[in-house]
Amino acid sequence: MNPYPSYKDSKMEWIGEIPSKWEVKSIKYISGYNLESLGSDTKPDYELDYLEISDVNSGGEINEPTHYEFSKSPSRCRRIVKQNDIIISTVRTYLKSIGFIENDVTDLICSTGFCVLSPNDVIKPKLLFYLVRSEWFISNVISQSIGVSYPGIQTEKLMSIKVLLPPTNEQSQIVSFLDTKTQKIDELIEKTEQKIELLKEKRTSLINHCVTKGLNPNVEMKDSGVEWIGEIPSHWIRTKMKYVVHIFGRIGYRGYTTEDIVNEGEGVITISPSNIREDKFSTENSTYLSWEKYHESPEIQIFTNDIILVKTGSTIGKTSIIPNNVPEMTINPQLVVLKNIRLFPKYLYYQTTCRFIKESFDIEQTGSSTPTISQEKMNEFPILNPSNDEQIQIVEYLDEQTQKIDSTIEKETQRIELLKEYRQSLISEVVTGKVDVRDYNG
Image: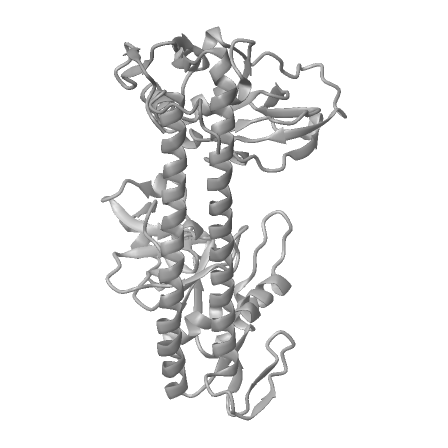
């Protein structure tokens, strides 16, 4: 693809030169915004489909909307969305949540966290969608966002941002080119994501097999007595969690309030479920608790080789083992910590990631809106106990094999990020006229 034959100064530093026949227009001159909303007189039983800002991802893909009756919908469920509208999150946290309503829709309502653009006749709706997804547009929104805890851009400022308007006869060609190219990129991303899911399933199956069947395929087996475990090596012992660990949680009267939360450097990390990702521990995006509260509960102070489990909330059952060289930490009320472990700690950790432990959580948890499980119930979870030598052998084997799988997952994840970056760069180059796609024939 070649550049356009001639260019002119756009008078916008972040874009530079643009094709000589293109125009520069503020969005407010090529699109209406927030044209229709549900009023307070809407009937309580009016049925609608609702999109929250988290329902749109950085690739422009839109999740299935949530169905509500108006009386039971969130208070921000107000803005009416129609075919060919573009929805843009004005909240900086979800800045790249930009979606295009390509198909005819009925009763689709979005959050007031979106600005709803309704393009007029001077621009192809899909082209405006690509324009507002470009890097320079998003950078513009970031620079004009205000606020600290919940930063965002005022709708009037968003509508004043300038975009490029190609001649009408070129707009369809640009849209056709980008539709074709981004679809191919998205298909590659989807295939890579499927490969990652298969690798994760392989990893889970491998761990589950090794910690329930061992490494010797010829060993004599016996019934474990637990349906979701099946047979285990005949010399293994089936025991219970309470006989191999002590479980500690944050005692109610030693809970804490927002007043006990401090800034980084003024206290210790208080671990939450968000610190566990794919059964691995991370200190990113941590919350900090006062030293006073930390020393108040020494039994839940966290050290290397402790195992943490989520006991309350939507991610109940998530688990991780604490690595070496961690700072001083404690847990929040959603977690428990396993200490005084009488098995090889890493072997017990691998057991806590297994299907049979997840099954135990599913069976024993209570609560529908906020699932939870008691420490007493966890104490009764089945645990398999091979010899010490076997535990070490299983851990060494799983460490080696899972590392290989994790390395492959990491490479494929990086590939997805590169594809997304390429997609974003391609959109930006085309909608700013850096390349001429008028003669593109696929």
